[in-house]
Figure 1 (cartoon, rainbow over the protein chains, first blue to last red):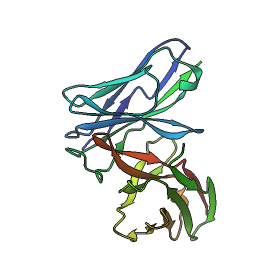
Figure 2 (figure 1 turned 60 degrees about the vertical axis):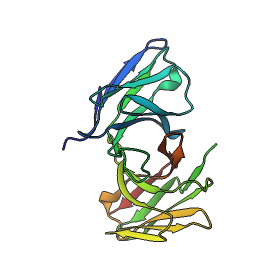
Figure 3 (figure 1 turned 135 degrees about the vertical axis):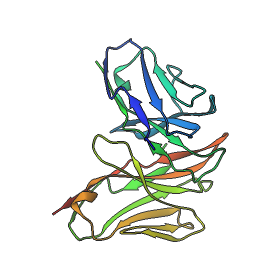
Length: 116
Length: 114
C-alpha cells in the first residue's frame, strides 16, 4: 500500500498570501488529521476530518481551514500568511472507522512552508 | 499549557548503551500512549504503543514502561544503534469531541555514537 502523500514538499510564500496544502491518505483510511510542527511548539493538532466532516479542531486561528473530499483526500488552507506560520505541516491518516483510540496514525513526510 | 512533558530534550548514547526517554501526563482521561520516531526529512512513524491496563510492552529492543499511578511512561531502547539516531515523540491520546486526538511531547533528539 502506498503511504500518505503530501504535496508539495516545499513552499515559499510571502506574508499576506494564502496557501493550500494537499494530502492523500492511505487507501481505505477515512480519517485525516493535520499537525503543525515547529521547533518551539513541537507537534500541534490542527484539525481532523472523517468522511468529509470536521470532527475536531485545535486551537488555531480561523485563518487555518481544511476540507476533505469524498475520496478521503484532504486539503488545508492558510490565508493571510504570517511569519509565524513557517513550519512543517504534517498530514496523518488512520484506519479507524469511529472513535477508536488505538488506531495508529500514519504520517506523510510533510510540507515545509516558509513565509518571508 | 503542555499536557505531556517529555525529557530529556536531547540524549547522547554510545552504541550498545541504553537510551531512556521519559514522559509525564496530567489528564487521567488519556487512554492510549504511542511513541513515534522521526528521521530528518520524514514524518513521524509509530514505533510502539501501550494502553494503561498494561505496565510494560516490549517489541524487539524497544520497551515501554507505564506507571498509571504516577502518570508517567518511558521508552527504553536497549543495545542502542547509530541507526536509532532520530527524534522521538511520546503522545497521549484521549477522547476529545467526536474522536481521539493525541497530545504530543516536545520530542527528544537521540544521537547514538558508533
